[in-house]
Amino acid sequence: MLRKRVGEELLIVDSAGSVFEACVDSDDGSFVVLRERIDRPSEPSVELTLAQALPKGQKMDYVVEKTTELGVAAIVPLRTRRVVGSQTGEGKLARWRRIAKSAASQSGRNRVPTVEEITGWDDLLATFGRYDVVLLPWEALEPVSLRSTLGPLVAGAARILAIVGPEGGFAHDEAQAAIDAGATPITLGPRILRTETAGLIVLTAVLYETDNL
Image 1 (spheres, rainbow, N blue to C red):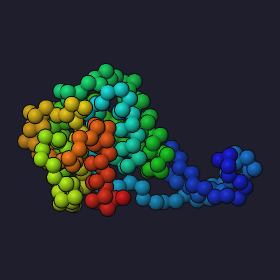
Image 2: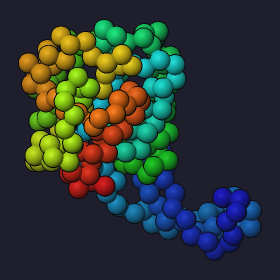
Image 3: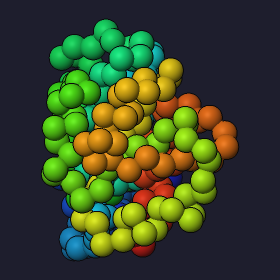
Image 4: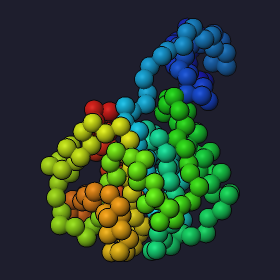
């Protein structure tokens, strides 16, 4: 704002994600006049949920912020067998929710994604019926390009869940249980991605395939 001059136009996004046209009305940029609200679609046409196995350190902050910018509808912090970052409490949940709110506002979204309570593996599997598609990136599979597989999987889907494992990957029986419950295993190419990267790749690919990028 301090670099704006009198008469310059800008867009303002409020805490609810509403966007307004405005005009600077003071020399120091400290006062603006709102002109009108802009109704522009900012949410994907597909509802995306990311179940993210809890990473070490502060990596979950990054996951929450960046997936919110991409347009995720909900984030499920997930506890799997090989999760290392297990020290979680109400303080961290509150922090992640604040990060989601801030990122949603900054990126001009009309909604703040939900950050769910920390969920166990069996409890997550029990929710699969809520989704049209459940994607399970699993490095144990023979690599197959997303370009050849993802499009048909997400075509026509309204609600999609993507599950990302921890630093040590899913235990084989965990992955098999998810597949038996209805998840579709996919690969993200020949390179092993960090857990905080994999979710961004999956969501971006889904958004691209569903014409939301």
